Length: 292
Image (cartoon, rainbow, N blue to C red):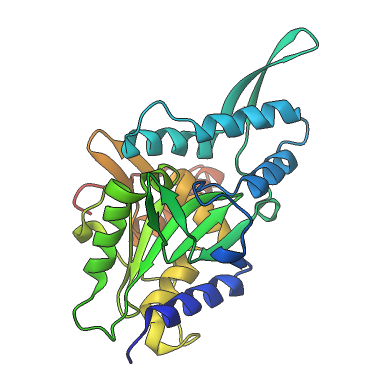
């Protein structure tokens, strides 16, 4: 079956809606097209997640995540990952006293207290460059995943072109979008793979299981099997946040994300450790990244 880019977008959106993501077309968002954050949603969620923290401190946290000291994508991405997983430290002056707060960008304790949104065809303008990524996943107003889709109906275009386009966005046209990115997804409907902003195309990998116990069953259209396995496998809300928080690491050479077998293997190993401790046993856990 031949897929158009529009049909792939629609499939991605429907899959994400099926797992309770909200959906808005990019043209329907009230925003400045030079801003990659959805500031209204971001402020609303941060106030809700950090109920005991003064609004002035929330605004300072938003200022910090909008302001970087460098234009280097990797450096800024590494800093933002720390903000996303650990919170943003701010200093505020209230009633003559200095107060220190850590503003959480995500509610890891109550997943449904976060805003999961899929947006397509969002116009972004940076330094005079106007680009429209196919699909962006926002969590609490933050563009955490970017997807590029290519049509199998055009013989001269394939998944490698999707990768090249994302790299072009990152390196030339709209680099600020990638300051906040956890990982990227590329697909032509037949092949669907995920990887980080520093990964070469041969390190973009399929996600081959929806859960850790069995291969995907005949729940979805066979035409999109590779795509739906990745969407339902990686983007279940708890799992997505778990991957971002616990299964991404930075090295001097780049950013690494666990593959599906490493993720599920680690989760099983952790369960084994817990059970072994309960039974006064012993166990060890190692996540191998190089060459695996």
